[in-house]
Amino acid sequence: MTPPRATALPLTGLRTTDYHTAGEPFRIVDTTAEGFPAVPGESVAERCAAAIGPGGSGTAPRRSALDDVRRLLVREPRGHAGMYGGFVVPADDEGAHFGALFWHKDGWSTACGHGTMALGAWAVESGRVAAPDDGETRVRIDVPSGRVTATVRRDAGRTTGVAFRNVPARVGARRIPVATTLGLAEVDIAHAGACYASVAARDLGLEVSPAALPALVRAGREIRAALAAHPAAWHPGGALLSGVYGVILHEDLPDTPFGPHQRNVTVFADGQIDRSPCGSGTSARLVLLAEDGRLPAGRELLHESVAGTVFTGRILPGKAEGGLVTEVTGTAYRTGEHTFFTAPHDALDTGFLL
Image 1 (cartoon, rainbow, N blue to C red):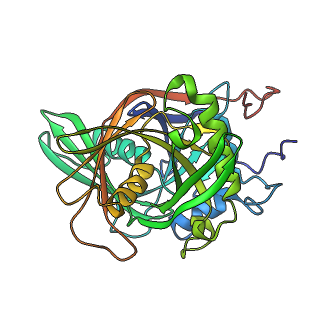
Image 2 (image 1 turned 135 degrees about the horizontal axis):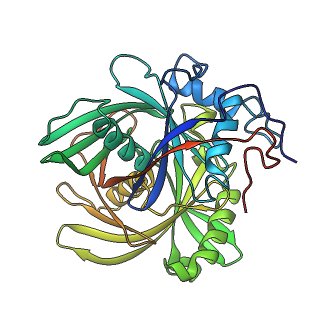
Image 3 (image 1 turned 30 degrees about the vertical axis):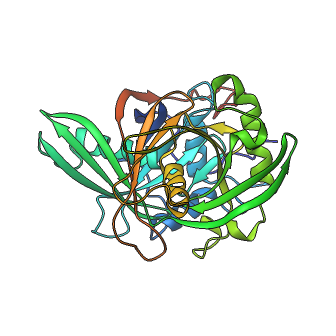
Protein backbone atom coordinates (compact mmCIF):
# COMPACT_ATOMS: atom_id res chain seq x y z
CA MET A 1 0.00 0.00 0.00
CA THR A 2 1.35 3.39 -1.01
CA PRO A 3 1.42 5.95 1.82
CA PRO A 4 -0.73 9.04 1.21
CA ARG A 5 0.83 12.03 -0.44
CA ALA A 6 2.33 14.56 1.97
CA THR A 7 1.73 18.29 1.95
CA ALA A 8 2.25 20.71 -0.83
CA LEU A 9 5.42 21.04 -2.81
CA PRO A 10 5.23 21.89 -6.50
CA LEU A 11 4.38 18.74 -8.46
CA THR A 12 3.71 20.50 -11.73
CA GLY A 13 5.94 22.74 -13.81
CA LEU A 14 9.01 21.06 -12.28
CA ARG A 15 12.16 21.93 -14.23
CA THR A 16 15.07 19.51 -14.37
CA THR A 17 18.42 19.26 -16.12
CA ASP A 18 19.53 15.71 -16.88
CA TYR A 19 23.09 14.38 -17.17
CA HIS A 20 24.72 11.01 -17.45
CA THR A 21 28.04 10.11 -15.87
CA ALA A 22 29.60 7.07 -17.52
CA GLY A 23 26.11 5.94 -18.49
CA GLU A 24 24.38 6.41 -15.12
CA PRO A 25 21.59 9.03 -15.22
CA PHE A 26 21.43 12.02 -12.91
CA ARG A 27 18.37 14.29 -12.85
CA ILE A 28 19.02 17.68 -11.23
CA VAL A 29 16.39 19.85 -9.53
CA ASP A 30 17.55 23.20 -8.18
CA THR A 31 15.37 23.75 -5.11
CA THR A 32 17.13 27.06 -4.45
CA ALA A 33 15.54 28.51 -7.59
CA GLU A 34 12.83 31.10 -7.08
CA GLY A 35 9.44 29.69 -6.15
CA PHE A 36 10.55 26.38 -4.61
CA PRO A 37 9.94 26.17 -0.84
CA ALA A 38 13.02 25.79 1.37
CA VAL A 39 13.88 22.24 2.40
CA PRO A 40 13.72 22.06 6.23
CA GLY A 41 16.97 21.70 8.16
CA GLU A 42 20.07 23.65 9.21
CA SER A 43 22.51 21.35 7.36
CA VAL A 44 22.45 19.06 4.35
CA ALA A 45 22.45 16.03 6.67
CA GLU A 46 19.40 17.43 8.51
CA ARG A 47 17.66 18.11 5.20
CA CYS A 48 18.34 14.52 4.15
CA ALA A 49 16.77 13.26 7.39
CA ALA A 50 13.76 15.54 6.80
CA ALA A 51 13.42 14.25 3.24
CA ILE A 52 13.44 10.64 4.44
CA GLY A 53 10.67 11.62 6.85
CA PRO A 54 9.56 10.25 10.22
CA GLY A 55 9.80 6.50 10.33
CA GLY A 56 11.68 6.48 7.01
CA SER A 57 14.01 3.73 8.18
CA GLY A 58 11.14 1.47 9.24
CA THR A 59 8.72 -0.74 7.39
CA ALA A 60 5.96 1.84 6.98
CA PRO A 61 7.56 5.22 6.26
CA ARG A 62 5.47 8.36 6.33
CA ARG A 63 6.24 10.26 3.18
CA SER A 64 7.75 13.72 3.33
CA ALA A 65 6.66 16.41 0.91
CA LEU A 66 10.05 16.31 -0.80
CA ASP A 67 9.71 12.55 -1.22
CA ASP A 68 6.62 13.14 -3.35
CA VAL A 69 8.79 15.15 -5.76
CA ARG A 70 11.38 12.37 -5.80
CA ARG A 71 8.73 9.78 -6.59
CA LEU A 72 7.29 11.89 -9.40
CA LEU A 73 10.68 12.28 -11.09
CA VAL A 74 12.13 8.81 -10.57
CA ARG A 75 9.10 6.65 -11.29
CA GLU A 76 7.38 5.81 -14.54
CA PRO A 77 6.00 7.39 -16.67
CA ARG A 78 8.46 10.29 -16.07
CA GLY A 79 11.38 8.17 -14.95
CA HIS A 80 12.30 4.49 -14.77
CA ALA A 81 13.63 1.90 -12.32
CA GLY A 82 17.23 2.85 -13.12
CA MET A 83 16.75 6.60 -12.64
CA TYR A 84 18.87 8.58 -10.20
CA GLY A 85 18.92 12.25 -9.30
CA GLY A 86 19.49 14.98 -6.79
CA PHE A 87 18.10 18.16 -5.29
CA VAL A 88 20.36 21.22 -5.11
CA VAL A 89 19.96 22.79 -1.65
CA PRO A 90 21.86 25.46 0.31
CA ALA A 91 25.36 24.62 1.52
CA ASP A 92 26.17 24.14 5.20
CA ASP A 93 28.31 27.29 5.16
CA GLU A 94 30.16 29.62 2.80
CA GLY A 95 32.92 27.07 2.26
CA ALA A 96 30.84 25.21 -0.33
CA HIS A 97 29.09 26.44 -3.46
CA PHE A 98 25.87 24.52 -2.71
CA GLY A 99 24.53 21.33 -1.15
CA ALA A 100 22.92 18.24 -2.67
CA LEU A 101 20.47 15.53 -1.63
CA PHE A 102 20.73 12.30 -3.64
CA TRP A 103 17.85 9.98 -4.48
CA HIS A 104 17.06 6.75 -6.33
CA LYS A 105 13.98 4.65 -7.07
CA ASP A 106 13.56 3.48 -3.47
CA GLY A 107 14.62 6.52 -1.46
CA TRP A 108 17.71 8.50 -0.51
CA SER A 109 21.47 8.06 -0.28
CA THR A 110 24.21 9.82 1.65
CA ALA A 111 26.83 9.81 -1.11
CA CYS A 112 26.95 9.72 -4.87
CA GLY A 113 30.18 10.05 -6.82
CA HIS A 114 28.62 9.99 -10.27
CA GLY A 115 26.08 12.58 -9.12
CA THR A 116 28.85 14.79 -7.72
CA MET A 117 30.60 14.68 -11.10
CA ALA A 118 27.37 15.56 -12.91
CA LEU A 119 26.70 18.42 -10.48
CA GLY A 120 30.20 19.78 -11.05
CA ALA A 121 29.69 19.81 -14.82
CA TRP A 122 26.21 21.34 -14.40
CA ALA A 123 27.48 24.07 -12.05
CA VAL A 124 30.15 25.16 -14.53
CA GLU A 125 28.10 24.77 -17.71
CA SER A 126 25.09 26.61 -16.25
CA GLY A 127 27.23 29.47 -14.93
CA ARG A 128 26.37 28.65 -11.32
CA VAL A 129 30.13 28.51 -10.66
CA ALA A 130 32.37 30.75 -12.76
CA ALA A 131 35.02 28.86 -14.73
CA PRO A 132 37.60 29.72 -17.42
CA ASP A 133 37.34 28.17 -20.86
CA ASP A 134 40.65 26.40 -20.27
CA GLY A 135 41.86 24.81 -17.06
CA GLU A 136 40.35 23.36 -13.91
CA THR A 137 37.64 24.66 -11.58
CA ARG A 138 36.86 23.18 -8.15
CA VAL A 139 33.18 22.95 -7.25
CA ARG A 140 32.68 22.28 -3.53
CA ILE A 141 29.45 20.53 -2.60
CA ASP A 142 28.00 19.64 0.82
CA VAL A 143 26.31 16.23 0.80
CA PRO A 144 24.85 14.20 3.70
CA SER A 145 28.17 12.41 4.28
CA GLY A 146 30.28 15.61 4.29
CA ARG A 147 31.97 18.02 1.90
CA VAL A 148 33.12 16.71 -1.48
CA THR A 149 34.76 18.37 -4.46
CA ALA A 150 34.23 18.06 -8.21
CA THR A 151 37.20 19.34 -10.22
CA VAL A 152 35.91 20.23 -13.68
CA ARG A 153 38.42 20.31 -16.53
CA ARG A 154 37.65 22.54 -19.52
CA ASP A 155 39.36 22.79 -22.91
CA ALA A 156 38.31 25.54 -25.34
CA GLY A 157 35.05 26.01 -23.41
CA ARG A 158 34.14 22.31 -23.41
CA THR A 159 34.01 20.10 -20.32
CA THR A 160 36.41 17.23 -20.96
CA GLY A 161 36.49 15.51 -17.56
CA VAL A 162 35.46 15.70 -13.93
CA ALA A 163 37.34 14.38 -10.90
CA PHE A 164 35.41 13.55 -7.72
CA ARG A 165 37.29 13.91 -4.41
CA ASN A 166 35.38 12.02 -1.76
CA VAL A 167 35.13 12.23 2.00
CA PRO A 168 37.77 10.02 3.71
CA ALA A 169 37.21 6.32 3.04
CA ARG A 170 38.12 3.43 5.32
CA VAL A 171 37.94 -0.34 5.55
CA GLY A 172 35.26 -1.67 7.91
CA ALA A 173 35.87 -5.43 7.90
CA ARG A 174 37.43 -8.13 5.74
CA ARG A 175 36.37 -11.60 4.66
CA ILE A 176 32.98 -11.81 6.34
CA PRO A 177 31.40 -15.17 5.43
CA VAL A 178 27.94 -14.73 3.92
CA ALA A 179 25.72 -17.60 2.77
CA THR A 180 23.79 -17.01 -0.46
CA THR A 181 21.71 -19.26 -2.70
CA LEU A 182 24.71 -19.30 -5.05
CA GLY A 183 27.12 -20.43 -2.36
CA LEU A 184 29.28 -19.02 0.42
CA ALA A 185 30.99 -15.68 -0.25
CA GLU A 186 33.69 -13.80 1.62
CA VAL A 187 32.63 -10.16 1.79
CA ASP A 188 34.61 -7.00 2.55
CA ILE A 189 33.02 -3.85 3.94
CA ALA A 190 34.28 -0.31 3.36
CA HIS A 191 32.83 3.10 4.17
CA ALA A 192 33.18 5.78 1.49
CA GLY A 193 30.40 8.27 2.16
CA ALA A 194 28.08 5.26 2.11
CA CYS A 195 28.72 1.69 3.23
CA TYR A 196 29.63 -0.84 0.52
CA ALA A 197 30.03 -4.59 0.64
CA SER A 198 32.47 -6.04 -1.91
CA VAL A 199 32.57 -9.63 -3.14
CA ALA A 200 34.44 -11.33 -5.96
CA ALA A 201 31.86 -12.49 -8.50
CA ARG A 202 33.85 -15.67 -9.15
CA ASP A 203 33.25 -16.72 -5.51
CA LEU A 204 29.62 -17.19 -6.53
CA GLY A 205 30.40 -18.76 -9.88
CA LEU A 206 29.50 -15.55 -11.73
CA GLU A 207 31.08 -13.19 -14.21
CA VAL A 208 30.31 -9.48 -14.44
CA SER A 209 28.38 -9.30 -17.70
CA PRO A 210 24.96 -8.15 -18.90
CA ALA A 211 23.91 -11.77 -19.35
CA ALA A 212 24.61 -12.49 -15.67
CA LEU A 213 22.71 -9.46 -14.33
CA PRO A 214 19.69 -11.36 -12.93
CA ALA A 215 21.98 -13.60 -10.86
CA LEU A 216 24.22 -10.68 -9.86
CA VAL A 217 21.20 -8.68 -8.65
CA ARG A 218 19.90 -11.67 -6.69
CA ALA A 219 23.28 -12.13 -5.02
CA GLY A 220 23.54 -8.41 -4.25
CA ARG A 221 20.12 -8.36 -2.60
CA GLU A 222 20.88 -11.45 -0.53
CA ILE A 223 24.24 -10.11 0.68
CA ARG A 224 22.79 -6.73 1.55
CA ALA A 225 20.01 -8.34 3.56
CA ALA A 226 22.42 -10.70 5.34
CA LEU A 227 24.64 -7.81 6.47
CA ALA A 228 21.83 -5.46 7.50
CA ALA A 229 22.67 -5.70 11.19
CA HIS A 230 26.38 -6.44 10.92
CA PRO A 231 28.43 -4.24 13.31
CA ALA A 232 30.97 -3.42 10.57
CA ALA A 233 28.20 -1.60 8.68
CA TRP A 234 27.80 0.87 11.56
CA HIS A 235 29.34 4.31 11.03
CA PRO A 236 30.43 6.50 13.96
CA GLY A 237 28.56 9.37 12.32
CA GLY A 238 25.27 7.71 13.25
CA ALA A 239 22.36 5.87 11.71
CA LEU A 240 22.12 8.08 8.59
CA LEU A 241 25.55 6.87 7.43
CA SER A 242 25.16 3.28 8.64
CA GLY A 243 23.90 0.12 7.00
CA VAL A 244 25.01 -1.48 3.74
CA TYR A 245 23.94 0.79 0.90
CA GLY A 246 25.37 -1.13 -2.05
CA VAL A 247 26.97 -4.45 -2.92
CA ILE A 248 29.86 -4.38 -5.40
CA LEU A 249 30.37 -7.63 -7.32
CA HIS A 250 33.73 -7.38 -9.05
CA GLU A 251 36.16 -9.33 -11.18
CA ASP A 252 39.83 -8.82 -12.03
CA LEU A 253 40.97 -8.06 -15.56
CA PRO A 254 44.60 -7.94 -16.73
CA ASP A 255 46.48 -5.07 -15.10
CA THR A 256 47.23 -1.98 -17.16
CA PRO A 257 50.71 -0.39 -17.14
CA PHE A 258 49.33 2.00 -14.51
CA GLY A 259 47.76 -0.42 -12.04
CA PRO A 260 44.86 -2.81 -11.40
CA HIS A 261 41.96 -3.21 -13.83
CA GLN A 262 38.59 -4.43 -12.54
CA ARG A 263 35.04 -4.72 -13.81
CA ASN A 264 32.10 -4.42 -11.43
CA VAL A 265 28.39 -4.10 -11.05
CA THR A 266 27.06 -2.27 -8.01
CA VAL A 267 23.64 -3.39 -6.80
CA PHE A 268 22.04 -0.83 -4.48
CA ALA A 269 18.67 0.09 -2.98
CA ASP A 270 16.23 -2.77 -3.69
CA GLY A 271 18.05 -4.30 -6.65
CA GLN A 272 18.86 -1.13 -8.61
CA ILE A 273 21.91 -1.44 -10.90
CA ASP A 274 24.53 1.28 -11.34
CA ARG A 275 25.28 1.70 -15.03
CA SER A 276 28.53 3.50 -14.20
CA PRO A 277 31.42 1.92 -12.26
CA CYS A 278 29.91 3.72 -9.19
CA GLY A 279 31.79 6.78 -7.94
CA SER A 280 31.65 6.34 -4.17
CA GLY A 281 31.79 2.57 -4.69
CA THR A 282 35.06 3.08 -6.56
CA SER A 283 36.35 4.90 -3.47
CA ALA A 284 35.45 1.83 -1.43
CA ARG A 285 37.30 -0.45 -3.85
CA LEU A 286 40.36 1.83 -3.72
CA VAL A 287 40.83 1.56 0.05
CA LEU A 288 40.42 -2.22 -0.08
CA LEU A 289 42.98 -2.53 -2.86
CA ALA A 290 45.33 -0.20 -0.97
CA GLU A 291 45.10 -2.40 2.13
CA ASP A 292 45.89 -5.41 -0.06
CA GLY A 293 49.06 -3.66 -1.28
CA ARG A 294 47.79 -3.53 -4.85
CA LEU A 295 47.53 0.25 -5.12
CA PRO A 296 50.75 1.92 -3.97
CA ALA A 297 51.47 5.61 -4.54
CA GLY A 298 51.40 6.56 -8.20
CA ARG A 299 49.21 3.65 -9.27
CA GLU A 300 45.63 3.90 -10.54
CA LEU A 301 42.63 1.60 -10.70
CA LEU A 302 40.96 1.35 -14.09
CA HIS A 303 37.40 0.59 -13.04
CA GLU A 304 34.97 -0.66 -15.65
CA SER A 305 31.19 -0.93 -15.39
CA VAL A 306 28.95 -3.73 -16.60
CA ALA A 307 28.05 -1.37 -19.48
CA GLY A 308 31.72 -0.98 -20.46
CA THR A 309 32.17 2.62 -19.27
CA VAL A 310 35.17 3.50 -17.12
CA PHE A 311 36.37 5.58 -14.17
CA THR A 312 39.96 5.86 -13.01
CA GLY A 313 40.68 6.06 -9.29
CA ARG A 314 43.66 6.76 -7.09
CA ILE A 315 44.61 7.28 -3.46
CA LEU A 316 45.85 10.80 -2.80
CA PRO A 317 49.02 11.32 -0.70
CA GLY A 318 48.68 11.65 3.06
CA LYS A 319 46.01 10.42 5.43
CA ALA A 320 42.97 12.38 6.50
CA GLU A 321 41.10 11.98 9.75
CA GLY A 322 38.82 9.00 9.34
CA GLY A 323 40.55 7.32 6.42
CA LEU A 324 42.21 7.77 3.05
CA VAL A 325 41.38 10.49 0.52
CA THR A 326 40.39 9.11 -2.87
CA GLU A 327 39.87 10.72 -6.23
CA VAL A 328 37.77 9.23 -9.03
CA THR A 329 37.81 10.66 -12.55
CA GLY A 330 35.25 10.29 -15.32
CA THR A 331 33.09 12.20 -17.76
CA ALA A 332 29.62 13.74 -17.44
CA TYR A 333 27.39 14.95 -20.27
CA ARG A 334 24.11 16.82 -20.37
CA THR A 335 21.31 14.76 -21.93
CA GLY A 336 18.25 16.99 -21.64
CA GLU A 337 16.24 19.73 -19.98
CA HIS A 338 12.67 19.03 -18.96
CA THR A 339 9.55 20.54 -17.48
CA PHE A 340 7.34 17.92 -15.84
CA PHE A 341 3.62 18.24 -15.13
CA THR A 342 0.93 16.37 -13.23
CA ALA A 343 -2.63 16.54 -14.45
CA PRO A 344 -5.09 17.21 -11.60
CA HIS A 345 -7.16 14.07 -12.27
CA ASP A 346 -4.35 11.68 -13.25
CA ALA A 347 -4.98 8.44 -11.33
CA LEU A 348 -1.29 7.51 -11.58
CA ASP A 349 -0.40 10.53 -9.41
CA THR A 350 3.36 10.35 -8.69
CA GLY A 351 3.82 7.24 -10.81
CA PHE A 352 4.68 3.57 -10.48
CA LEU A 353 7.58 1.12 -10.73
CA LEU A 354 7.78 -2.17 -12.59
